[in-house]
Image 1 (cartoon, rainbow, N blue to C red):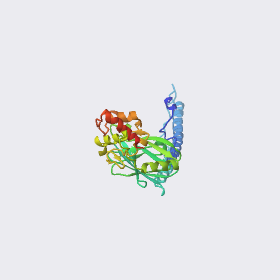
Image 2: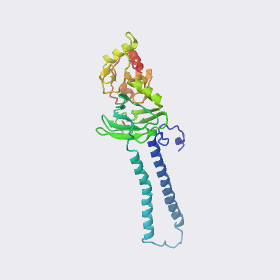
Image 3: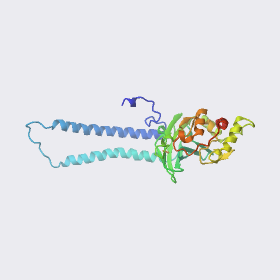
Image 4: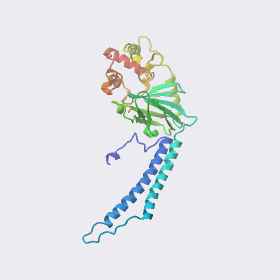
Length: 316
Ligand code: CUA
């Protein structure tokens, strides 16, 4: 109980930051109070009976009752009524959160072992692991999977949804506070299930527009003779182009789109901050950092690694 008092709780559903999150929180609070009333009444009657009718030396044998119609009707009706009080708001919340607003921003989420692909079909953006949303605007999220069953969850923004292959789940919400909210995969999906994290950035309209403009731009090719250009050649030579898209340069789609990798705050699906040191360790041996990672060590030589990292970091 003491450890629960520590905080902070970055992934608490009890601090909702969207209309969907608030609806679930209200439902939870209502059901909590009903459950508390039931607990107090049941435990109270139990304690009363245990004490009042306890065995006493030399006392008479207790009087036996066989059936009490009024009591039986009462204890059938009371729970049924309580269930109605719980079911009505629950069903109402399910229906109210299961339709997209007509002006919603459409986002497609695709779970992969072990990272998240994000697509904005109306904006022509494809990115990974870090979702950006404008504050106050409804979002219609379409969730699916490219391999096994995952589950997408940003607790502050609302309920979790399974990402199943060949199936599309809907999740709709309207974020109401600017901030960065962490989340993660919540369906066991293999060795690095716990390393399948995510970040959702809720931004002001202007910050979101700036992000969109940046994502839609094609990075300029590095200057001839620059270290970044050497890095780009290494990116090609080591076969990175076979799995990763960099707009205007490569078109692989097995791994995350790296067009703007330099602008992300984390790498390896939210596992590590995006720094030179982490990129180095990651490229040297991905499965050592992330068990089961599909990306093998490409045995990049030390002289190629530094330019390669410089190139990736230049992709803002
Ligand atoms: Cu993906 Cu657990």
